[in-house]
Length: 318
Image (cartoon, rainbow, N blue to C red; front, side, top):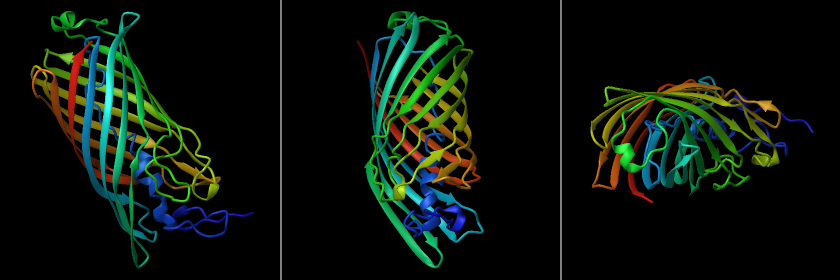
């Protein structure tokens, strides 16, 4: 059986017909799933906390923007309007006298993607449970695991930590559709991060990591889809206005991620950057609210998105 190429390298189905939406179907690779993990901005992800801390998190976000394809192709004016709600839980504890933490987040997403294919305008609506994320983090250098009382009188120190984020394929997925909420594959990101305090109020942070993906053996048409790793870098500068109130400027750069469908390479390797702002304010003794904004700065392929988000967190000790 032979397989050809559709416009922009979109694969043809084993049944001999082109994938529905043709090149717009590549949105799964270029827009939402391709770089959604890499676009994360996480200020203070490696800042120390006391042990025995529990927290629950609820967040809502709205994302809009364009999807960039090869300008010589037949797809134009592609845009996405997506919303997401996330529920999460986290816990800090001591491990061999080092601070460690585990977090679990489960998203639900809904929205629509539209674009011109030739002379026709098409729109797709999607909603459903997304792939969950589990993260384990361990601080290796810096303050040891401290109780709440010890943590309150600590002297800030430079900390270096490692983390592993695992995303299992539990989100909504239908192999008869090209564009899905879930990705039907495992994703793993090892990462190293450093947090450097200056004068007790300023923090400089840098993270380096990479996303690795398993094969999706049930891609549209029953074929296989593979994706190369996406390397990521993050940088953050934050300032503590008062206890539990801080503001951060955020930046990330990510590249790689070319996909292969049924042995045919797509032209969807990214080399993108993103910047944002984060404000965290206390809301009582045990609660805080975060406001987040981010925007694509340079986009070679994929989603050029602007995101607005708000998150509520409630924390308590064992």
